[in-house]
Length: 274
Image (tube, rainbow, N blue to C red; front, side, top):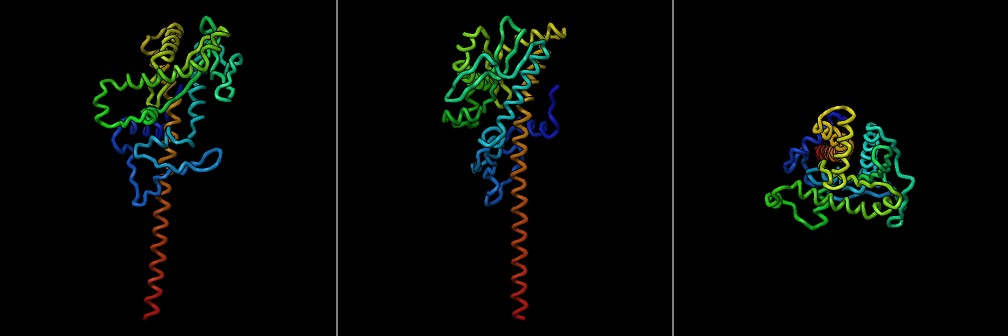
């Protein structure tokens, strides 16, 4: 079972409710705490402005634990494969591709669940970054013009699935393997192509194994995958909020210290004049 702790659950609930400031952040006049101070693994700091919704801290900052989010989702996909009776390994030994100068392999290899060995590659993409890169200004009016935002997110994830297929599909087919790109966005939505097809096939396997309804089986599989990645997004967001609050506390202490020094200075001058 995959569960959220109380802090993660509260963070994601505030995030889901929405609003301009779901986490109750109040910038100081200097807005010093608005600058992201997260460090990078290769050295240096982010130094970009954070937003009141927390999007930068949870999924946009280059310094976030994106690798941890990916690894959690990868591990969960492997765990589901094992639970359904498959022989699972991390990374497929048969598929090794040079992509943009880097050797890369699919994230999960599953045997004995399908007619052929299946290779899975997982990815989590930030929906807002996608529209920002498309230079789309996301406003309330923009949302109102979209009759079904789920379809918009689905288009984004279909593009992600195609990106993965360009890298792996031909090589997998040459090795007589199936390939499933598993794409999820930062709001828990899944790709409508290969991702949904894989979930449907795993749902049927779970129905046959545990004799439960299709709705319950699909819900359990989707929830397990969603929680694995979104727990790490919540961790990133909570860490970012803690950085903001700690910075604000330091600023209060510094102001108090400066005020005390001024009082001592003025007090000394008054004694001198007396």
